[in-house]
Length: 435
Image 1 (tube, rainbow, N blue to C red):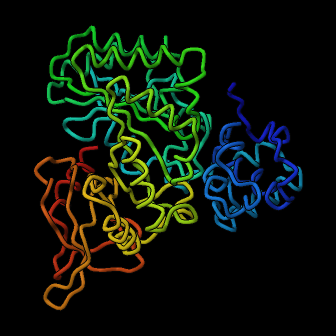
Image 2 (image 1 turned 60 degrees about the horizontal axis):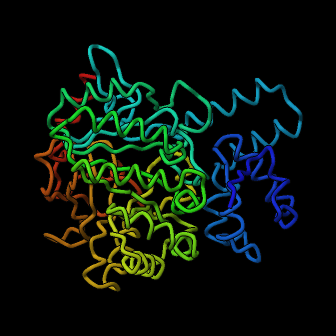
């Protein structure tokens, strides 16, 4: 199959375009001016149930929904467009709305961007001691865009808030200087939108640098969900697999970090064949996804998805809490509900699928897991722990927050047992002071 993208500019070329009513089309136009929209022929032809598209999780995952914007923001853009307002006035309002959507959560720009020889490397992030994130500039798009994506600023054309790095020399120099780094995550966007030749150049330069302390290369990609033909019929599909094999032969581990939000994404013959081809190279495929209202807030969805993944040889890895950015008002769920869904889901699967850790907030201090809701000293509390932290000494250390049925993120929480602060707050305050 040949790839064809659909955006706001050519949405009328969709075979199913006539199925979309005027209200839905208007919502797509208004919301996609603020948040990115792109889909493709595989998604629309093989994943979406067009007989019930308005409630279909794959349609909601890909096509902007009116409620993704706050009512006043939607009406503001809608009024400007309907009145044929000056384009600069429209852009000014769009920028204002975007700035209010927390475009770079968890301190990605301020606190994660490393410095090399006095230069900030905007295409790298080094938050956790052992892991470095690399954003190759040619991989800062995707085969299709998730409507919930927490990296939506990568796709709106604003260079001031885009993470990208062209020069792999900076990456290699930084890796050599930081011997604590064992894992490199190549991410985006989606690095597998790059040609095999281009990906091979990056990978080969890293391998040829002979960085002994680097043990694992991870590739974060949504391609198995949105374009499995990347590994089947694309002109360089075989070459991509050879790049994967090259990493293995060099004595490094290659982990494919796949994103699956719903069992429907695992239902086509194409994705089954693509998974089998990738696994034949010796690559380990791990899966992760956030909990998303309107898409997967059901224990049956998660348990069936994890079981299906195990049947296909994948390793369930994370259930995330949706980050506090973009359309979180539409997709977010409460922490209490997240815990209940995780617990109900995980008890429905065998031990081999219980590798999925969750629910996890990837937030400013680190990855915080909700371990449960209990009553201690007549106080109902969340039991929390770090599974990753800006300070590695925090990992595995339990701590407690007052139960709040409405909390949706860690900064909605307050310490339990009348404590004035969480144990990590002094460290974080010092970090802010030094920034």
